[in-house]
Length: 149
Image (cartoon, rainbow, N blue to C red):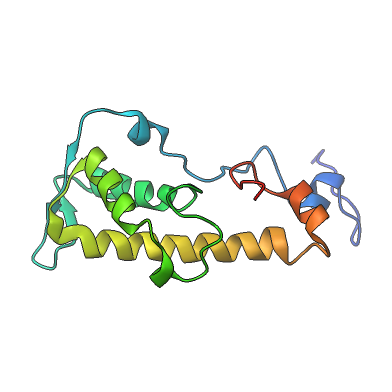
């Protein structure tokens, strides 16, 4: 066995930063969905939840909705309460631009976006706000999709 492991109590510089560029996958950007012009059909069950036409399309839709929460225009970071989110209509309209989805699925889609939005905000706070003592350091360490304001 030729692999070298740092002695207990010591970490490599890469491990100390918590980032492994080799194994890190990152967040799904869903460029293929955002860039496409054709609409994919979404079928609903009796509870108005997407079920088809294939599981792949349903999974893609859910991932796409999650990617919308990382868009500072559609989900501004200065909104602290989902009830105050003034872009819900825009989120739904943009979803309908990419999918042929019945109006009955609107509530499901917005709840899915809400849940992803909460997770994203929580992750940002835990990883990019709480660990740093002041805003200057936080701004230096911020992710690229987070606007300066």
